Each structure stands twice: as structure tokens, then as C-alpha cells.
Image (tube, rainbow, N blue to C red):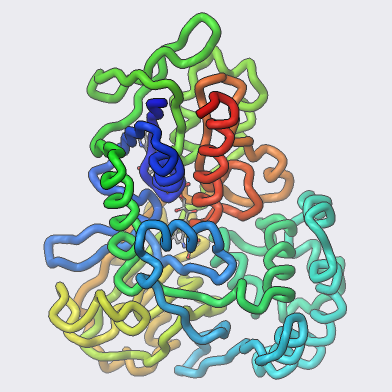
Length: 453
Ligand SMILES: Cc1cc2nc3c(=O)[nH]c(=O)nc-3n(C[C@H](O)[C@H](O)[C@H](O)COP(=O)(O)OP(=O)(O)OC[C@H]3O[C@@H](n4cnc5c(N)ncnc54)[C@H](O)[C@@H]3O)c2cc1C
């Protein structure tokens, strides 16, 4: 079969890997000049890598890791110490380290040793979070009607632990506050966190997600005969009388005919190109239930090291939710003489919640970030900021608010030659690289089982 895939994020590329491996003719059409979507990285005029966002691979990302292995990139990421590290004022750090015991003892003993939670926090968490640890998918689904804050309070878990521990996790996962995010994804994470020792360890890409993951995926697809077109924005579909796609039309008027068409577009872009005839199907109308989370990524180059932490960091009550010194975590990029880097720290910070930042000038955002960097990293007060960049994504991953999960579409659409991939489509993960990779695998399998081949 000839299959056209629109969108070259992790979802589109994963679908392509599956389909080229089964001998199909694949053409990928990507709107931008670079591949990777929300994982894309590009070089600016100084030769610095600019990331759409700081990206972490979790131990539980089985599908993504399988693709990384398949494309020969299994050594392109590096595991870090198994700990949650919170940056506190004046350079202090607090830790949640798992004990070297089987789960759930690793988490219980590790949690009891944590210094930033009070004894009451710990007791209330062990008691309150038990239904999440013991729960199954059906239980998690049944809790989707309330926010995580509501669930947490209902379970009698302490307010301090909500602000101190879980707020950072909600912001890291979906860029929204615990009083906005649904209970469902949060308690699903507790289950992983509390029952699978290896699932929650973090890895960083040795260079950056673009060079270490997207580029090997591109090379693999092309080596198997797949064709990739950039600057090739899907504009609309022309339909047959039975609502199936006759051909796709790009922004430059170019038409594409294929046996099957996969959208791997973000949901807000897909909504714009769904033909009105298809809106008679609830399946397509439901796409309008999704709203993207705004987020921004800030990178700061310093003339000296302001931290020596080789891991992801969280902080509470700051404009940045998760961050890392990528000159330490990523040993093959951001190093001395690479672009602006001179051996000093290169901080990559995910700014969330970011709705207030979307219309703010870069200088103002940088000033806000720097004020808090000085507060958390005292060594930065003597350092010179060599350069700063901000990437804003007004609609990134869909907001996992209460009751939205039920609207996540299956990869098979009611239109016989049209299929969906993307992190928002139905698979067991929240919007993430793993969710996108899983959607790519599922779309390929479902397409082949519907059309044969
Ligand atoms: C700041 C930030 C940090 C993150 N951190 C992590 C993390 O640590 N770990 C993790 O697992 N996940 C993380 N994520 C989430 C992860 O990046 C996404 O869930 C995942 O990359 C989404 O992949 P996708 O292929 O579904 O969509 P996208 O990456 O959005 O890809 C869609 C592609 O479609 C293209 N496109 C759009 N419209 C058109 C059109 N009309 N025609 C052709 N092409 C089009 C886009 O340009 C894009 O390339 C983060 C996201 C952000 C924004």
C-alpha cells in the first residue's frame, strides 16, 4: 500500500517505522522545515541547540525505547540516579529517593526518609494514596470526573504534600495545576510510581532529543525507502461521494493520492482541516473537546557552573516547574566551545503554568526566571548570563482536565481510508513521547487490519 502520513512528530515517525518495516510505501508530509514536532530541536545562528522543550525518557517508556533500539539509537540516552530532586531557596535541595527494595517498599521506605515532608504528610499520603496503589484501570477511569486536588483532599492527604510534592508533578506532566488536572492521570502515575521500581527512573538524551532520537528515526525511515517532505503543510482533503478521501491537498496546491491517509497532526491543527461533511460523526465533533496547554521553554547560558546536579530538578512556587543543567545531563551537547557554551551551566527550564507568559516579552520572562534562579542557585548571583532564549508553545499537549479522557479518539476513524495518530489519541499513556509512540504502533496495526496488508 501507499500510505501518506501528515505530521513528523514522534507519532508520525513511529507509524512510519512500523509501516516501512512491513514493506509499505510511506510518504511523510511535515509542515515545518524540521522534524520532531514538540520534540524538535534546531540550531540558531550561534550554533546553539534550541529545544522545543526539555525532554525526559522514563523507565516505563517501553514502546519508545523499542523504537530507539530499532533505529540504532539505544545508546543515545543515559539513566540518572533514581530520585526526585527539589531545588529549594538558597541552594538547598531536598530529595525523594527510592530505597533499594522491591516496590512498594522502595517507595514507602524512601518516602518515610524524605526530609521535605512532615511526618503527618507521610502518614496521610500512605493512608490517602492507597486506593491509587491498589487501583486498576477501571478505578482510575471512574475518578476522571474530579480534579486531582479534589481527590487528594477527599482522601484526607495533607495540603502541604499537595503543594510541595504533587503540584510539581502535575505541572511537569501536563503543565497545569493540581486544581485543574484530572485525578485520573495523577493517580495512574502513583500506581506506576508506587508499584514499578524501574518505571519511574529518568534518562536524558546524550545530545538532545532532535539529534539523539528524531535524526536516527529519519535516517531509518529513509533507509527503508520512506520519503519525507518538509515545508509541506496539509491544507485539506477532497472527498469521494462515500466521504472517503479522494486526495489530500497541500498548501502549495500539490495533491497527494494514497491508499490510506494518517493524520499525525496535533489535535488543534487537525480540527482545522476536518471536512465539514465528517462533522456528522461524533468521533470528529469530539475533537473539539480538546484544548492545548500553553507552555514555554527557557534556555540560559552562564559563564560558569551554577549547579553540579546531574539530573532533572523540580521546584515549588517558581515560574519554572522542571529543569536541568543540560551542560551536565547531556554530555554530548552544550559543552565548552559548542555554540555559546564556554563550560558554564546551560539551564533548560520548562515554564508552567504558562498562560500568563504567552503575550509577555522575552526580556520580562527572562527577568522573572533569573530572579528565581538567583534565589535557588546562589552561585548564579556571581555568574554572567551569556545568552537566553524562550520558545513558547501556546497549544502543546492537550489539557488532561476532568471528563476529557472519554473523548480521546481511537486510531480508526469512521472514514474508511483515514486514521489518526498522535499523543492525544486513545492509548494507555497521557500525552507524552511514549503516548505518541504507542499511537504510532496502534495506528499501523489498526490500518493494516482494516485494509489488509
Ligand atoms: C515543553 C515540553 C516538554 C515536554 N517534556 C516531555 C518529557 O519530558 N517527556 C515526554 O514523554 N513528553 C514530553 N513532552 C510531550 C511530548 O513532546 C509530546 O507528547 C509528543 O512529542 C507529541 O508527539 P506527536 O507526534 O503526537 O505531536 P507533535 O510533536 O505535535 O507532532 C505533530 C507534527 O505535525 C506537524 N503539523 C501540524 N500541522 C500540520 C499540517 N497541517 N500539515 C503537516 N504537518 C503538520 C507539526 O509541525 C508537528 O511536527 C513535552 C512537551 C513539551 C511541549
